[in-house]
Length: 501
Ligand SMILES: Cc1cc2nc3c(=O)[nH]c(=O)nc-3n(C[C@H](O)[C@H](O)[C@H](O)COP(=O)(O)OP(=O)(O)OC[C@H]3O[C@@H](n4cnc5c(N)ncnc54)[C@H](O)[C@@H]3O)c2cc1C
Image (cartoon, rainbow, N blue to C red; front, side, top):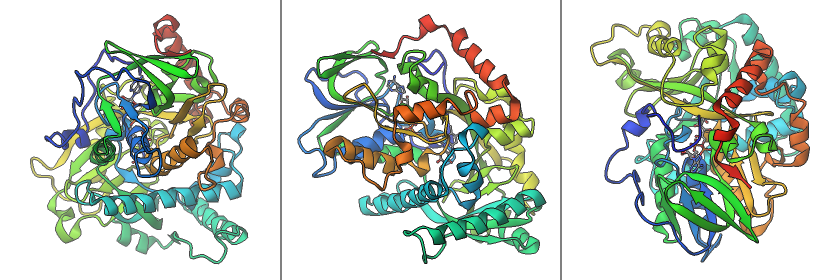
C-alpha cells in the first residue's frame, strides 16, 4: 500500500522526531492553491532525490528564469530519506563480487570496469556532500560527519572473500587508466587481535577501513529544499499526492488528490518506492521496481561508549548491522533485510509489506539487543540508555540493483530518478545534479554512470534477472516472487488509481 493518501499512520524515526522546530518545512503550503500557470519543472516527491533535484535546478546558470514546483504526498522527508540509517557511505571493494556477478545469477551484472567506476562515483558523492554542506554553512546544522567506516568480518569464509576482493580491486584499479597509480582509499586488515582492538566488536576476525560519512538526513533534505525555495524560483506543496499524469500536447497534467490539477512542461519522478503505483501494471518501470521495508533504531550507549570512548568509526558488520555514531545523539543502526531473513529475525512476508506503519517483532528485538550483546565492555544500561526508538521505511529494489535515471523512453517530457536499492544516500546528491544538467543541456555527463540510464535494452536485460527481487529469490526460490505478485493482485488492480497515461 504505497499509494497516497495512506490509510495508516507511519512510524516516526529518530530523524523526524528531532527536526520538528519552526525552521522545518512541515505542512508547507498545505492549504495553498496550486499554481494555475504551466510550470517548467514539476518534481514529484520531496525526499532526498526531490529536494536535491530542486536545489540543483535552482543554482545560478542552470535553469535561470524557469519555475520549479515540488509536490509531496505528505511532508518533506516523510519517506525513506527521513527514516534511514544516516549513513552516506560509498560501497567498498567488498561489493565487487556482487556487482560483477551476472544478472541472471542474482548480481548487478557489471563489468569490472563499470563496477570500479561505480565505487568511484559513490566516493565522489561523499566528497560532494562534504563540499556542499561546507559551502552552504550547514555542517553543524545537519550533523554532518566525515571519517572512516570499518567493515567487520566475523567468519573465516567471509574474511577470505574480502581478502580475495581486495586483491582483485587493487589489480583492477591498476588496469584502469583513471585509477592507475592512484592511492587506494581502502585498506584491509586480516589480523584478528588488531581487528578486535580497532573495531571493539568482540568476535571480529578482520576489517576493512575506508571513507564514509553520516548526516541527519531529515535536516539535510530540508536544507536542500529550503535553499531551493529561497531563490524564489522553486516552491513546495506538501500534502499534495499526485494521482495521475496525463499528456496533452507538449504539456503534462498532474491530478493532485483534493487539490485540483497542475500543468508542467517537464515532470521528474523522485518517488522511489512509491513509483510503481504511478505506472500501469505491466509498464516496464513498474516491473523493474520492487518496494520493500527496512527498519532502524536509535540507541543511547552507556558511558562506556561516551566522551573519548565514543565510536570514532561507522560500521557494516557481517551478520550484523550498518551502524553510525551520530555526532551528539547516540547510535543509529539498521539491518540489511537479506541478513535479517538469513538469521530468521524477519520473514519474506514481513520484508515485502508495503507500509512503514509498524516494525515486525523479530527485527525490533534484534535491533534492541545488538549493541549490548556485541560491543565489547558495553556494560549495564541505566534507565533511559539503550534503545529509544525503532522505526521502519519503504525502499525500492531494482532488477540490477542500480537506479533508473533519465528520460522515460517513449514519454517525452517525463524523467525519473528512483530505485536506489537501499543505498540512495550514497548516490542521490550527484545523480540529481547530473540529471539537472541533462534536463537543461540535453547532455549526459560521463561522470554519471551510464549503467544508471533508463533504456529499453536495460528493461529487456532485466528480464534475465531472477524474478522480482534477486537476492530474495536466490535465497528463497520462488516464494518471494509469488508472494509479491499475490500482494499486488490482492491490493486490487482496480484500486491502483495513480497512473501515467
Ligand atoms: C530503514 C532504512 C535505512 C536506510 N539506510 C540507508 C543508509 O544508511 N544509507 C543509504 O545510502 N541509504 C539508506 N536507506 C535508503 C535511502 O534512505 C533511500 O535510498 C533514499 O532516501 C531514497 O530517497 P528518495 O528521495 O528517492 O525517496 P524517498 O525519501 O522515499 O522520497 C520519495 C518521496 O516521494 C513522495 N511521493 C511518492 N509518491 C508520491 C506521489 N504520488 N505524489 C507526491 N509525492 C509522492 C513520498 O511521500 C516521499 O516523500 C535506508 C532506507 C531505510 C528505509
